[in-house]
Length: 570
Image (cartoon, rainbow, N blue to C red; front, side):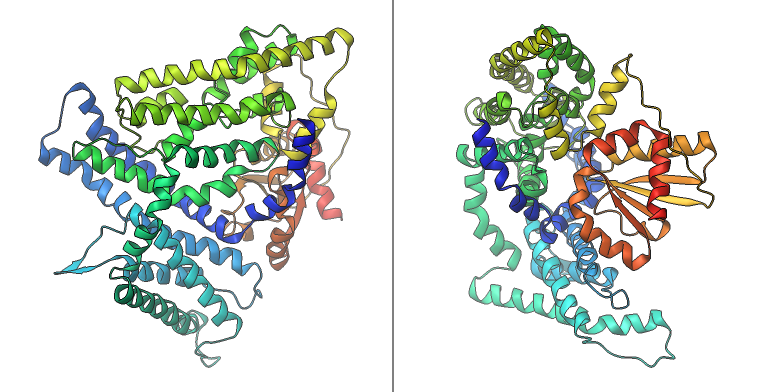
């Protein structure tokens, strides 16, 4: 097993490079920007259709009234995502552009939206049809965004623009600067739509849907869901952020399928689409990646080693809400050969069982999109509109995951017991995990749960006298908050003029000019060179951290202040 993991790790640089691809990142960030719309719309689905489970149905006029906010939010999701994806891609492209010759992201955002309307909206009397402006048009939204930004890039790089006299104010000059790339982008997409209608007999959005329909169907099959969700766990296990690679590839399918399920439910038909965001969050990753909801309980109740019991107790609550880093890194489970099989197998088994409940038992699939922090069993019940079968499903998944993990937990517990008897430790494995993952959040939770834990006292001194703003970046903005909070607390305690904020990489660009220093958490440290292009343009200091170093800084506010000062001394 160690040899297998070693072979897999050799391909890690390729997958890390893939995860940094600006187009995949643009899709991911575009969806993240649209998430408030998705969650908002789901509220009205729950209000409208959950009562159906108890035999109560709203009158048609009330149902229409309740679903109007859904239609005016989720119903134009593709339109919104076209703009947010274009904006995100523009930000990435601008990193390689001269500071004095940047692409106007507001212009690309508008052009992508107009382009999508040409590709997806069919004219009708007194307006246009909106059928492909929602989830059905997501793939087309990406096409519109990518084409638009690339045309802008060529035009701006080669100064294909309308030059105005120097006397013209910059804001007016910018308008004329954008005229040519805006026109070329929109016209190019319009020509694409004309070609599609003449040669395919349908608009681009409809044609794209027909083209990918076989793929969507295959993705809903046993082989498709095995490959997709097996990849999530597989990448995570070897130290690669799997969602950065897999999620952008399936995002359009998952949200489109949830919309299809809702339409089927509204028509009184069987909502049978398997591949949805709810499936990913509450079936496949119930309790976090690897379907680990039951694992902390197993560590706490059936393990004999003191260490495993302590880790189990500390991990139960966060894992229940989908934050399973304490058990993943504390045990550890990732990069641990003992847990390779259950970590991959449990998510696959879960989605197979879910498909059985849908296809054979007639259960309706997910129609609502809920926050990922919703406890797994509750997410299953809520997301599928309180069906009785959903309760049975949740209980079944917990039982199956227990059976899958049980023999491996017992084997690992015997290993730790032997280490405790002999006085050995698995520091080598822990160090390997810390080198491949950002373990700061997990360590903070575990340390807090350990009443005997004592933070190291830092001898470092600092002499920061000028107001200094620090931005800490991680993948999603959660882990970075640990260091930002440590800095702010220490700054207040020692009366040092330092203010820190946390953020997610990719959503930081508008914030950058307000900061003097950017610190990259270990999970985004691989983006150092890309980030340096941005910070150098603004004259901002940039620092990256490693796993063990970051952990120490989050525990030691005084040392964190010294680290900040060190960056300005270099």
